[in-house]
Image 1 (tube, rainbow, N blue to C red):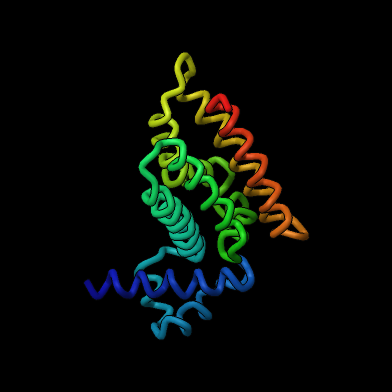
Image 2 (cartoon, rainbow, N blue to C red; image 1 turned 90 degrees about the vertical axis):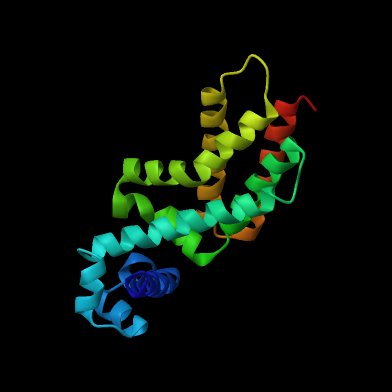
Length: 185
């Protein structure tokens, strides 16, 4: 129990530092000081700095999925659930830690590892939401891949934009048009 608390504390402080300056801001000494533990305690939980950064990215990806699921949970109708999840993900792209995670994750983990991590979190949620809307004669795997591609590109556009708020608004309009077309509206 104490070990889990210490690990969580380290990840929380590393994530806070990450939100301020990306991976460069996440130093072993800085995280240890912020968490009020020794560097030895940090290395007890993480083999190296890269493992700590992976834990930060996992935490960010999990929180995106959790918050999207929370937004979806407020709706009973399947299309409304899907749209609420997409809107939540787009909104989260405005948060500093999510912006940096989406922009630095492939450099930290490698593109394929980041994709797998993200797929296991919000990607799985998207597949569930799309399965619930049941579009006849359409491969769920292909549909999920295409919608996910549009969502990922929208997220990346928001996180890299000079005016993220404006890009968020535009991305929302476009993705609502995509879901409306899938719905046949």
